[in-house]
Amino acid sequence: MGKKVAVVLSGCGVYDGSEVHESSAVMVHLSREGAQVELYAPDIDQMHVVNHIKGQPTEEKRNVLVESARIARGNVKDLATLNVKELDALIIPGGFGVAKNLCSWAVDGKDCKVSKVVEDTIKAFHSAKKPIGLCCISPVLAAKILPGCEVTVGHDAECEKWPYAKTAEALKELGCKHVNKNVDEVHVDVKHKLVTTSAFMCNAPIHTIYDGIGKMVKEVLKLA
Image (cartoon, rainbow, N blue to C red; front, side, top):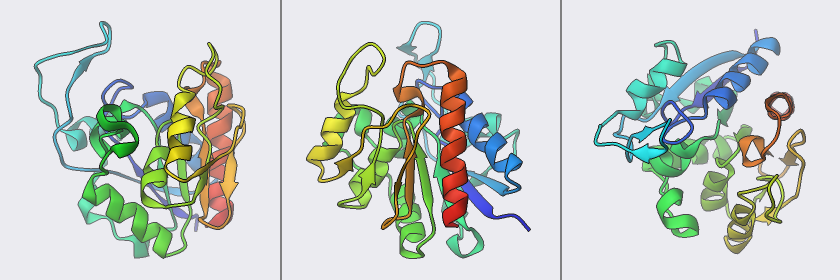
């Protein structure tokens, strides 16, 4: 029997939900490794809805759980029902939904607040000494909840390849150790059983992002 892994989504679409390619990559790599996937999302309203062609907010209202069902092909559960005792690991893909719906990083930066159900979930896995995998912007959740943890969001010097490098500096200000890694690499914080990779924090070909997520998945399962 394969490991049972909770994957927490934050909506559907890079600008206001989970990054679709990252979410798909996580599920494909978990499937390839023989793991069982359980998909979850909080039953809350999105911060806002973004027109993904224009990149601008609209007047629509959408629910994070309902939107996450698009990625989950309908098979997604309310995060409030998650039972850590029945699971072996936790993975949270990136996308602006993490920074808008799971926490308020998009608005408040390092002073953000994390949704209670998300914070409770991460703390439950950490307390149970079960591994957590985070990619793209989602390592900011660990930075807020697990003081002194080690993470990567890629590189800390901003350039065309690394347009979001200032995130690394904000993580350092929160007391985390940021470790520079390339897009196809991961960092493993053994003490906290935390595995991170940069994914779309890097302006890179999609196959390299897919490969980096694959390494994250493998390391999470090794720790499970």
